[in-house]
Image (tube, rainbow, N blue to C red; front, side, top):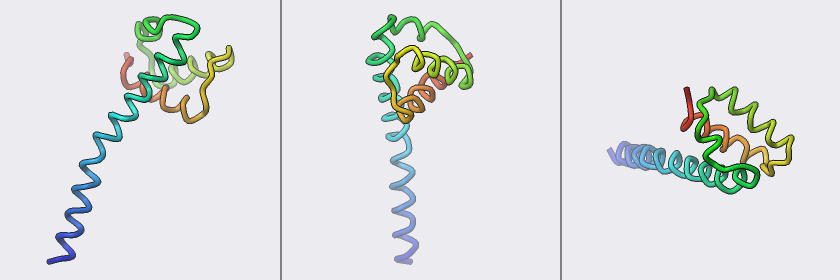
Length: 88
C-alpha cells in the first residue's frame, strides 16, 4: 500500500509539471521571437504568417544564414513555438 502511494504521488507530480514545462517553452519561444527576430524586422512580420513546422524550420534557418543569432537549442525552441502558435 505504501509503495502504491509513493508511486501515485510521483506520477501526479510529473503530470502536474507538464503544463508548466510547456508554458515555459512557449514563453521562451515568444521571448526569442521578440528579442532576436525584431532586430531586423518588426515581430508582426512573422506573426502574420501561417506555416507548417517544416516551413518555419526553413525560414528560421534562412534567417540564421542572414545573421540571426540563435543557438541550435534556441532555434529548436523558436521553431516549436512558431509552429504551434502560427500554424495554417
